[in-house]
Length: 498
Image 1 (cartoon, rainbow, N blue to C red):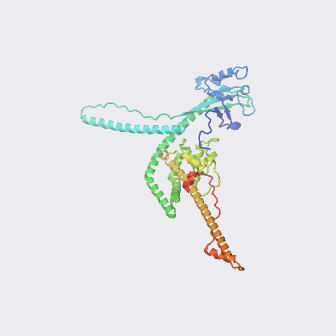
Image 2: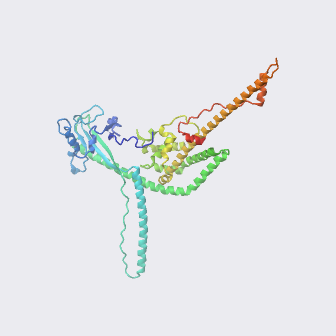
Image 3: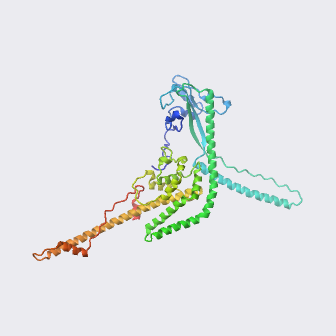
């Protein structure tokens, strides 16, 4: 229920192979898993010769038979790189092959797609830091070159007619470091099951070369994507800095105007209620500002990124607005699927931001991961300055989210305090009415005791006369608690709110 991106990972568990894509005839395998020790595909990551040793120790591919050769032994190394792979000429004769349906005649080839991935947050951060350092060094070098050229010109001018030869100066080429990377491991499996035939050498060679191209394309694609993220970030920051300088004071002034108007409309508000009105005005102003055309431009630029930082902040905003984890994350995990989730950053999202109202009961319980307390926990460690350096829009989204949660809590506390006040008034009114009735009964008894023998007592007239001097107390209706299922309020908070 908590937003732990690694909650689905068991560090002490077995490695698994999960099938994530397949052609039409093999779609039944998608989301199927093979655990370590099952099947034969794990052998693609063993060192050359290791799988043959295992099979020989177990009696070969089939009991009593020699191990089948890897296709690596079949291909011609002079034609280029050969991937270490697993090739099973007859799948039904190999007891280690795992089937997900009825076994069929044919062969099986598994090829490793292992490459260096750089599209993750730490790689992006390292690249930003490296480029920043390179830009600073290049600027220092530019100034040094200018000084050097000025000095050469000065000395040449001072040499008059004499021939002057300047001392050669070499300038270091300042290049950015290669991207930080992690090894990603995939397997490409191809078979002829149901065809009752082996792959030809040419087919194996083609599949080997195709897997290499696929692997290389993936790596090049990620490097190109991260390079684009880097370029886009530095270009956007220049625009954001200019926008910030021109508009920050205006925003602060407009926000204060919105707060002042809210207070003027509620002149009797004091203490906690006044604080709520202040924060509520800020929330609505922030939501409107967050949805402005210029802010949407910054957000659209962020949507163009392959790597997104602070995904937990985005998830928390989505959850608060009613989006479900299944819409945003990879199946069975709390990991944001940015490629999918960014499409929800649209006009509907911005309308929900502006329409969000923290006031009133909540009778529908949200998922535990969307409870306001959990959302508050999700974002409490984010620092505004760090966010602002990365994304002007994301930093303002954090402000809005903080206000949305804070005003929700304030509203609940204010309503509960009001309920408590009404209960106290009811108890007080009940006590006063009870005392009034007791007094009326006592006076009635006293009046009856003073009657002369044979004198009748007019009870209705007495009651009418008594109530003219002691009007009945209006006892309020029973006070019912509101349901606020989207947030937990603890006793110490309730005590402060009351």
